[in-house]
Image (cartoon, rainbow, N blue to C red):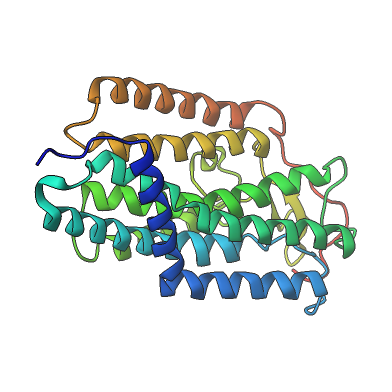
Length: 293
């Protein structure tokens, strides 16, 4: 019996199957439920947060992105075991990889819903006057929200897919999550200062708090970097992750995929450099003292 090689109809069937599998994952439901609970609290202003939805991104990034690393890692390993058991009729690895990548529509949808809730909250319950520095528009904050919230909710599962392809060992996903959290704490933009290279990381602040007013006095401040270009940088990294995952298949067109991967890697480097150097290159400090910092 010949090996199945078609990627058209088969990809659609497998993609729907992996979407259902993602929806059945208990960690996803836990993360989705908590993310949506945060959205409800925001929209109803139950916590009376004067910063409005400025920090909502922590929820989808952690609950959908970080948990998604483990969810996708598990789905990919299960897919591989099923393919091995099927033997000669197994679907090519590249097709299964693309189907798994399609399953990221699940965390994307929940994260997008939470992003819409954050934008609604920002407008219905505007932040206090000391939150957004003069000259910084709402779209600046929305860009940070979308990158840290929606794109990270997709990037986490894609990282899990990459790990499953190249490091399919027990415990790898958990170690990766710990490392992600550790590096993010160091590069988020608020702990070690305004290190410009932080924009090459997956999750960072562009609007945060700083003690620029002196000891014991904090002000909301923009951290150097262009959040709009950073969105393109993150999207490029997501595309690069998919290409690298497909590249693992020895039967794929590796020559073309390597060229594509190199092109995307180059584009990511350029976008990262542009994020540091084009617009918003200096901090903007709100003159009003933060009342809740």
